[in-house]
Image (cartoon, rainbow, N blue to C red; front, side, top):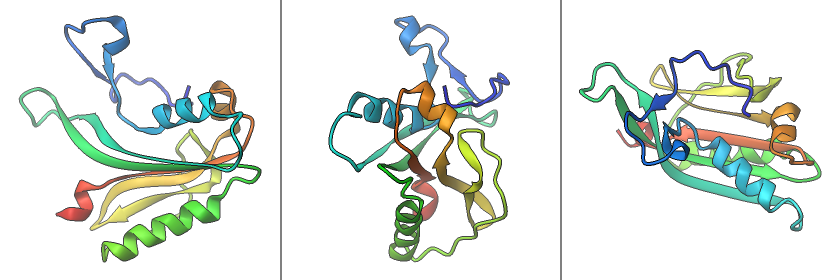
Length: 159
């Protein structure tokens, strides 16, 4: 639904889940936020939403093969994509935390429009990404309006 390729190297699969609904642990907050927007698409625009939550990332260096990371995500959905608002939010987060960051050239995440996305780099490590959500992803969630989204690892800013 997010246009990501399933290369079997990113999804954390639970060995003995209670049900099939809980077989895969989320590795991004994006799907949950888009699902919430889809359920509220008939409400007045713009829709502004955020979430702070844990995601699980594969990590061969741990005993269980995965680690949890605390992420923050925000989405703006309205008549325009609101990219400048999401970019402003990123700027403000970085200003408040006293963090310097670099926005390298064109990022190629499939859930975002090409040329309208960027990585967030802190101390040489990618801590997040933001951009305009790809129209195919919005169609997959039955969202008629353009959206911009940011997700970043909060823990990396606190270390």
